[in-house]
Length: 328
Image (cartoon, rainbow, N blue to C red):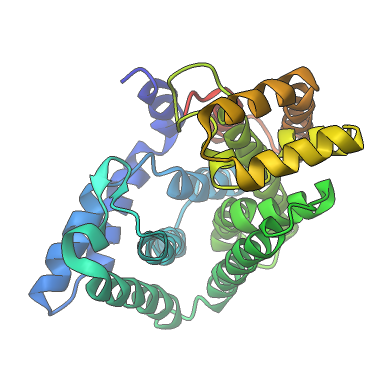
């Protein structure tokens, strides 16, 4: 349970808001259909670290000097509703039976019900914004969903050839991962200071944190410890990560052919995967990725400089360090 400590510390200045948010989020899912209520109750009870709503509330309180309003709660609920919908659909697409240590909805209630529940959550999210005329918040979230879909498809398209450049890799993770954290941060600012310079500044801040977060995820694939996902899983899934891209771009033609052949045709061979991991380490791929991750973190840090010191700003700084230092 030690990993919960930094999260509890980050959450401290918004404990009250997070508690109230959970109640409001639960209510935002309610339906007249008993089966749906049973499933959404299950969804609410298997929540993860709740980093997305935490970003919404911390940013809104930092930007406004400690204020949140009903729009902030609605925005956080809409982000969670729509993001949960995408996760439910993802589990169906990936034929995945578990999420965060729990059974996935498709594992318990089968694909048809899971897809319908995803559609239901999506429509509930849209209506929560529309019914309250939060069109600016809805636009932020809708752009994020569009970008996430494009990022996933771009990754699938590029993974077939493995000819990915560092620039394309950044495009993929910007859309696939960073855009959702960017949406949370810009939404937090827009809920209390609509049409202000804070909205774009906080979007950029969230995007930079999201980039660092994804590179940290890439690095787990080369970890020694039994933490996070099993070592080498990205290679087995033919995912192009930053350490591997750097190594490919800095290898001889012969080494490059061996690497591509290994990832494409021998990704289930444990010995070969280990050799690839070692080669990436020896080529400085991990060191390069770590430097890039820290550069994104530094840039994110500079986005917070204009804001006066506050417990909310402190928590956002802690969150930035947590992204880099987390163990899974």
